[in-house]
Structure formats: structure tokens, C-alpha cells
Amino acid sequence: MTEVCNRTFDSSLLSGFVDGELTQADAQQVRVHLEQCPQCRGLVTDLQQIREAAMSTPFPAPTDEEWQEQPRSSASLWSRRVGWLLVLVWLAAASGLAIQGFLENTSAWYGKALAVTLVGGGLLLFLSVLFDRLKALRTDRYRGVKK
Amino acid sequence: MAATARLDLETLADPELVSLAQQGDPEARELLARRYRTPAFRLAMQLVGRPEVAKDVAQDSMLRFFSSLGRFQAERPVLPWLFCIVHNRVRDLERKRRRQRVESLDSYLADSGYEPVSAQPDPETKAQRRQLQQLIWRALNLLSASHREILVLRDYQDLSYAEIAAVLGIPKGTVMSRLHAARCSLRKRLQASGEDVPMLEETSRSSP
Image (cartoon, rainbow over all chains, first blue to last red; front, side, top):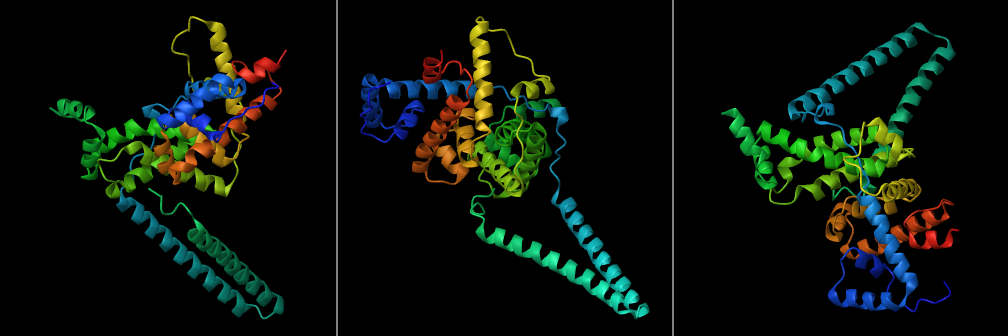
């Protein structure tokens, strides 16, 4: 392995050669070089072996019976969304009322402090998730490609 | 009558099947699902490396595939579009957390009840190939996500450079250089694995 490779083209052409994705002129250039360079010849052979081994690797998939995906209709998706929304509204209202009742019945300062911490904490968590989502939405480079 | 109609459907090419499914034909949808969930699963498995996660990804991708069917031009090939959806799902997943991939292909094959179709005439070559496949899989797990995905699309899925560019949303000119970098890095990992890698030039030459 002492010979020095005197290749004049970009090495990625070797991959293009393995994949048959080169123009005729480029392929010819690579072929001529391979004849005199054992180093690149070794690389090309290895890449071919890796490719053949990868392509012939078996990946058994679940059988037809094992799939549960039934295309969900948009009606069921919407009813699910509205259902969640109603449950969330109920939860918010119920906890609001509970906290109000708690505050009215407790005059001690620590009672008020507890309520404020709970509401404040919940609000902060919600805001942090919201900001993360908004940021992800703005910086997602795949949004144009999606679907 | 229904049987003949179903038989006719089976022989339909994708564009006709897609446009029938777009009109809401449930049998056409079912047939499309059966035709494409296995490719979706295989790609997901190669990208995420765990069969149970791959199944979730594939099922979710098929749902998205059907919910976006209305926006798809029926005459375009289905596979790159589906692969784009699968790839996006995997990206979403990896953004959330890094998942451990299964180390051993053999345990996955045993769990799935897979049995080789037929014995090859040369068992030694077969065993060597098996070992190489296992080593490549393990090295693949150590690569960066961008190197892994381009290797999977080319060497496991046999997509053309143009199709890879479409799935990854990168210029076609970038495919060859990124792929070559990924392959060289995989080969380096194989050589550095310290194991006797069968069938490879450099490693077999340098090993005693």
C-alpha cells in the first residue's frame, strides 16, 4: 500500500461509478484510473460488496393480519379532537372553580400562596410548550416537503 | 361478481388504483395499503432499527399517506412520496429522543419467525455474507443520522440518486458526495471494528 493515488477527479465519482450514475465521460475517466490504481480498485470493490450485502439483508415485515391500521376517517379524527377540547375546557373550569372555592375558604396567607404557585406553575409550563412548538414550526426545514 | 371485481382491482397499476382510492373506493384503499405498508415498514426498520418502533412509524405513515391522498397527483410514482412521509416521521421521532437500535440482526430475524428461503449451494459464502450483513448493520448504528439515511435509501432500498434527492429534499448534486462520505465512513467503522470483516478487500488483506 505504498503507491500514491494520483487521481485527478473528486473521490465521490467512485460512488457514482459503483451506482452507474455517471455520465459516459466521467465513467470512462474513472475506469482508466481504476486500471492503474489498486487503492481505488480496492475501495470500489469494497463499496460493491457492502452494497450487495446490504441489499440482500432480509427484513421480514409483519404479515397482513398483524397490521391494525384502518384508514381513520376524518369524521372520527374531528370528533376525537372536539372530544379532547371539551374535556380540557371542563378540566380548566373545574380546577378554576376549585381554586376559587379554596381561596374563599382559606384566609391564611400560605393558602393563597399555594394557589398562586399552582396556577403560575401550570401557566409557565403551558407557555414553555407553546414557545417550543412555535419555534419548531418556524425552523422546520421539512415543512415544505411534507406529504 | 364481487370476486371478479376484486381480481380486476388487483391487476390495476398504481395510478388507476390511486385515483380510485382518491374517489373513496374502500377496496382500492385497502389494496394500496397492502401493497405499500411492507416497503414502508422495511424503510422504517432500516432507519430506526427497532421492529416495534418501525411498525408504529409505518402505520402512522400509512395513515398520513391516506389523509394526504387528495393532494397527490395519481400519475406520479407512489414510493418516493411514501418514503418522504416515512422519513419525516422518523425525523420527528429522532428529534424527540435518540432511540437505541437493535444490535443483532439475528435476534430480530429469530423473533420475526424468519427462515431462509432455501439453502445456498455454498454454505461458507453464505455464512460470510451473513456476517458481513451483521457487521454493516452494527456499523450503520454508529453513523450520524444524515449518513445513515442516505446509505439506507441507496444501498438497502436501491433508490436512484434522483429519487433520493426527492425523498431527502436535497439537490441531486449533493446526493453523490454525501453518499460517498457516508460509505467511506461506514467502511472505516468496519475496518476499525477490530473484527475480521469477510469479503472486504482492505480488511481481509491486512488481517493475518
